[in-house]
Length: 369
Image (tube, rainbow, N blue to C red; front, side):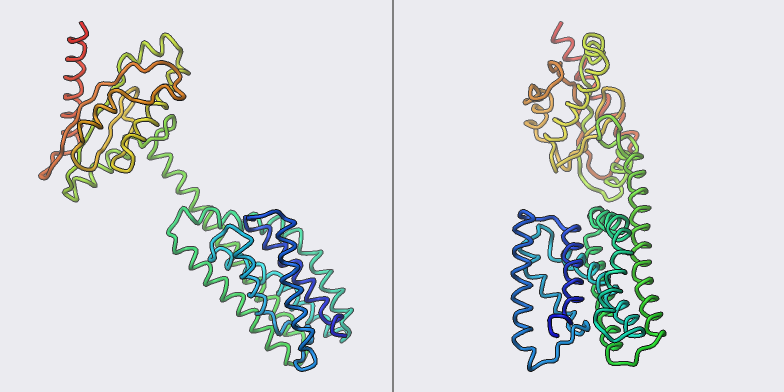
């Protein structure tokens, strides 16, 4: 009778482990993951079987919280952080425990035999597994993948909310076990499960809409060809540095004879030339500055502090150009301006550094002639 009572629990466990596996990133092969989880399950059920004479294990869901022990092998089997594993585990437990509890309550209204419980549990899993795995799981993984675009505390908030929802469902299940069977309990479970999954759907829609806004903000602030910040972002950054009275440098860069490159190699190669310069200049500045595409073949970089002469030479010479370059490098003219409080306006700063760049370009041409 022990084994028969535990068939519904085993079925719940299989669906739960499969659901969790669908959401997390494995470290090892599916075979190794299944083997480890089977061994862990065998150890737990073996322990329960040994002590079943002393403790009443009826397979009614009263020990569902012990399912959290699976967090131990999960941490070993999956690449995700502990917080993400906890979020996924609690979410999947809500689904499987919801089906289990609902099946048990409805079965109790019809027949006390465990076979009725099994039939209903299988029926509910068959009805819900397609929408859960094909509709809910992709949305849930989308939320997990895109939460990193927001404050990292969102993961902790989601983990806390999911744990509370799972504990609430487990608590209600435990209370219902000890109470008289009624239709009211079935409706209460349905309402709770529906509310939980509705909250997940609302959270998903919030993330989707937030991601759309972030993408629109990105498009508004970045150059579509090079991926660098555009003029709008440049203006915002400069105004922010000016308002906070910071010391910074502005570099105005103009690609020499870019029109000749377009004429000789074509505009497609010209675009690749711009993108290649954008990547190299951004790598040269690294975290100490940021490059923006000002327009056409002109770029403006902000450097946090005074620009070292070695960095200016590196930008002018563009070492490492050959790797992945669409055509030979034809040099760049630069103008550099150190900006210290009290600051000029953004327009005055850009006008001044543009003049410096142009003067250097004229000197370069005169030297070449």
